[in-house]
Image (cartoon, rainbow, N blue to C red; front, side, top):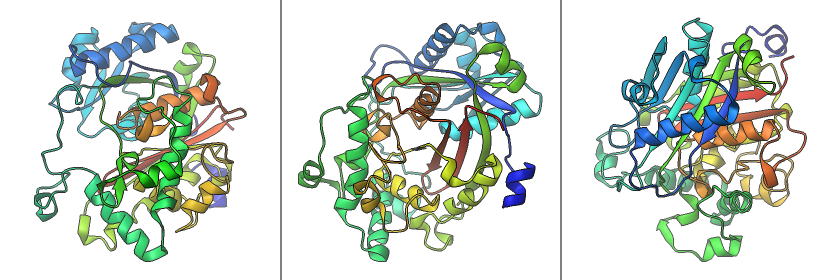
Length: 387
């Protein structure tokens, strides 16, 4: 690993060849009377306006398909008035997967300034999760129409292996709610203690309301540029240093699939890719449709020992007020459900010192990790400096 850190030959070693130059988002919650595509385009408009970047600079467009068949690049481009050199739509973009495609497009020379756009109105449109989650299999027919089913099974497996308690799991939701209280964008801002958490009824046993995200309407946008273009567009680029992905597409053919062991393969690659050790990460962002996914990724990336999540939060090693800040916007559990796009908006603002009352001082390097349920995992490391 030492050789890979030094030479920059590891897979996914972007090392500052691309950077996030601007982020933006609309209001979140319930936004009736406007389509998902219009919300995405509004997020793009606000991002350009707040950053001072001209629309003419955008020569790449990557969109993420959203609930109801919205989010297709051809329609977003038409509404936004764009004729980019490159455009594409990912069926499940989330922020990491879309960002990695943008970095690859820039590396290939197909575009130099890529707008990543997402908009959704699934709250107003009444998404009731009536379709199978992932595959139409026996699990789906028995009710796995929402992430709560697989997450609940995964937590039961974790309990069996390590003796993890519901109070241990609850520390994640409590920590993120504390961050959300300083975030005016957050949907859930009322105080939440561990006693409040444990007193709440189960939503899908063993998970409670606070363990699961609330679907929401909203839009978000990131603009990613080549290193050369980034220097022209902003004085504060947030450099992409390393990227990594791995799938678990064999599903239950994989050993111990509830624990999603293939995330560990991403963990093995991401730090050599970025040229850093894990200890250099100043802030961590984990996509969190459920608190169980946060627990798993904290362990697989080596920030918490297996079975030690509760103690890590209680000791101050991780979370609100702790050594390693985690999901400083409140995450999807308290802020809003935007498939991880708001995590990256927050990450960039924190690294640029623009996070207001929740600003953490001295941040230079941050990591964002996400998954697509039981199927895919990805991670990206960012820095304000290129060494």
